[in-house]
Length: 244
Ligand SMILES: NC(=O)c1ccc[n+]([C@@H]2O[C@H](COP(=O)([O-])OP(=O)(O)OC[C@H]3O[C@@H](n4cnc5c(N)ncnc54)[C@H](OP(=O)(O)O)[C@@H]3O)[C@@H](O)[C@H]2O)c1
Image 1 (cartoon, rainbow, N blue to C red):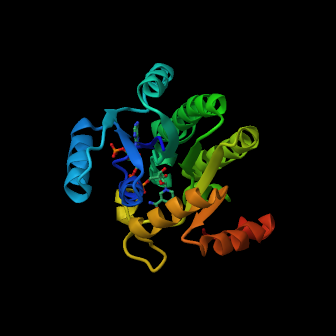
Image 2 (cartoon, rainbow, N blue to C red):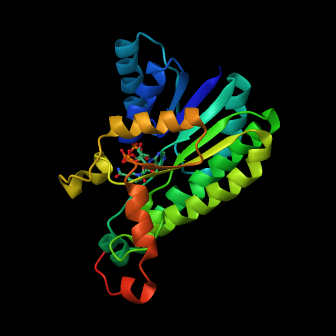
Image 3 (tube, protein in one colour):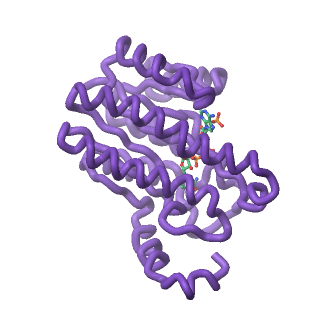
């Protein structure tokens, strides 16, 4: 078995996913933009799992460095998986006041992430093996006034993953779209407690289980599939009057 790259490994969800992979004896490589946080994470994992985990500093911006980084990564390692967790979520009110927040949301969540996914896709297509599991969001399933900039970035990402899955299926490469509901991480710390708020560990287990089952689309926790199918079903003339 080759190495699974965990991109944005310092994210709350990816930290838990990294531990879930190590518990199942996968070889992983951590990538994130903050080198000190990466070194701390690798050290923690060494203490917990008695494993040396390699890491690589990697920022999503600027984007013109990605092609070279992916090429050298595949030269150095036998990579056979990518778990992508990078994302930003500025409150909608901030996006309404500050165009740079709209630009950042689209650039990180959609442009930069899809540039990297496509570069990994090229490699996996040639090797005719591998998997890409990428976190999108239930927020991409329907635009709501409370977070439609973030939702639009994730809707674009979901559509990209759909197309990529369609392309890579014939090459035996899994492309998995992960759609979490609310998960307790630094991204959601301002939202407070809620019975809908899942723990990263629970979501991480469901994600790795779904990768092993080769599942295309995962709502996590599972009940979000039913919540979102209800939300998607509401007719637009009614939906636009709701405060969601
Ligand atoms: N938490 C939720 O309720 C929820 C629900 C649905 C979907 N999601 C999605 O799940 C994914 C993980 O989020 P999370 O909840 O674990 O939140 P998080 O802890 O805030 O993780 C976000 C990650 O994105 C990284 N990132 C942001 N800008 C970057 C850049 N320019 N270059 C490289 N990395 C960058 C952050 O790096 P730093 O650690 O350096 O900041 C962080 O590791 C995101 O895609 C998010 O949209 C989360």
